[in-house]
Length: 332
Image (cartoon, rainbow, N blue to C red):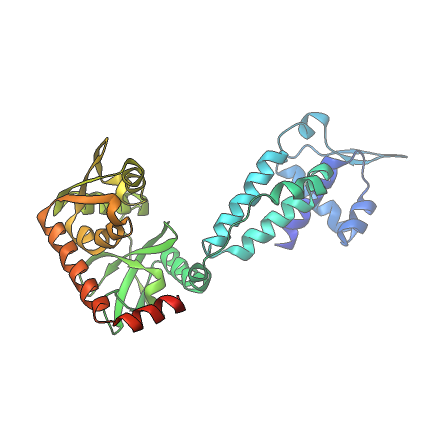
């Protein structure tokens, strides 16, 4: 890796200067003059038009036409790269160290004005606060990605959301996807004998099996998750009609999941097409957060579930005496 780093450094130094001698490059890179000549020869062999001029003020140089080529990023492009790295690291990107090293090289050997304090101040206006869950998942993501690339099966200790105990499963990992602040793994599950989706933060242990597999030729992680979402939205679904204030309905229609379920939104009425399982598990709590500003018109199964939840809440809080209720409110 040091060889390629030094060759790239030579290219950058020649781009920023006029004539530079082998001795000057040797001193700056802390390598021998002989090694400098060897690297110059390698760059020329790869097509870089390095010229050599003998005599006083001579040395190696790059033609003016080559210097005008877009070897470097402008300040806007560099800022975009740096800020994109903030999002990647905040998501628990498994190769944070390598990404930081690459960006450091770009910054160090970039034009002086783009390394100035003015550029650093441009980055001060945006920051990404990483989720602790994503940071903790980084080692697991690294192992999973290696297994995906090497096409080797793994044994995972997985805990489903509704299970009290973890289960060991052997899987062939096909690909990772990051969506809505969570990492997901698509893998062939030997227990289920089909491709399944696993949440990475629910994988509590991982063992390498050494067993080699072959990923389906036309499988892509993007198309797989697109198909999964389409299936959830169309199979076993119900039409949900909600009336309410325009502010509340607009917020519901812009919800990260519900916005893909909107069938119609007109004044005072929102119509959704939503999977029954998701509707009954998540929608009641969301609707309750809007208090009296929204009201479910249909389906009856959802209305009945709301009645049941409200009755249970009333029963739970109704058992608290007046004195105890006051003390609870004071503590809050």
